Image (cartoon, rainbow, N blue to C red; front, side):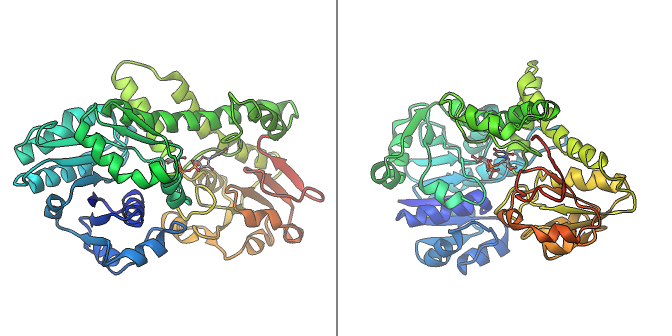
Length: 431
Ligand code: UDX
């Protein structure tokens, strides 16, 4: 098929490259000239395992890039994969997405025949119905469900495994409100995954499809917060939460994944989407008690970590190490990273902070300029009076004699990633 993808961020670029790999001709459209030039040259600034080889393999052939939205009209269908950033009150700012929808509307105004617009961006159902579809209708002079259609096809990609998640998803959610042309086009688009890999598809309404994304992420975030809440209780009772969670996870109704308790969740999705869903609920006069509690528990975990550190060392004017700055291992992304409240808490205590992350030093240094960044965990630990372990980088498991170089080996582990216990003042956050 001939496909266009508006937005060349992490979701849009992964989508473009993977669709090319499935055999489709893809036109990536982005307002940013540099992004387009790089994509055309077969390069990307997005760090995802497996993505670079796809982009360089297909650039100039099955994958083209442009800043011109008019290109959408020459394709069968257009994905909208534009970011929906959070505003101050937690709700999302859909202006970039709506501008893209309008551009696509203008592009298809003179197109003969049906065009399908597929919403990939994470956006609440009301915005799709009340703002996005009318924007396309106004700009194109055409009617939804007649000359063009709108489908909602949310993305469940995880950072660090986005290409694998695209190629081997648990399910493909297709919200069309039953429009047979939209269903047929998306079935054809995903045919290699559906037929060759037996990926189940869920055909549903557009509103439901949009909500499935929010609900899934809210559920997963709440699952982690619940195990953290239980973990905090376990710690008080001297119980090892991980032993408890292992047995809980064997119950099929609970499941073993997302039961790693610790300093909590971050990233580009969980914080933004729980906040947006809660804000939307409150706007509709419903108090989302569970989601608010999930956010509250998550906000509290870094504070608990700092309190544990305080119970062993007075950080004022002392060298304190922070190991791990990315929101999770395998990425340089610091959005929503738990390291930020830890750093801020240590700054408030007057600590002399030294930080290390295998990928995220640079990103954090842009936001927190007053702390020392070093190139290894060993350097960070050298001479430190305490260390907060924030990200579950596998290399931290191997740390052993490096702790012997600390001025005082106080180790507060927020991810249960440190394997050495003897000779340390070791505190697990929830164990
Ligand atoms: C998430 C969703 O998994 C994905 O489907 C969606 O499309 C985008 O948001 P991502 O943000 O890449 O993906 O990270 P994920 O691996 O889900 O982890 C989210 C956060 O939860 C991380 O900060 C991670 O450290 C934390 N987490 C996860 C835990 O604290 N414990 C767990 O058991 C699992």
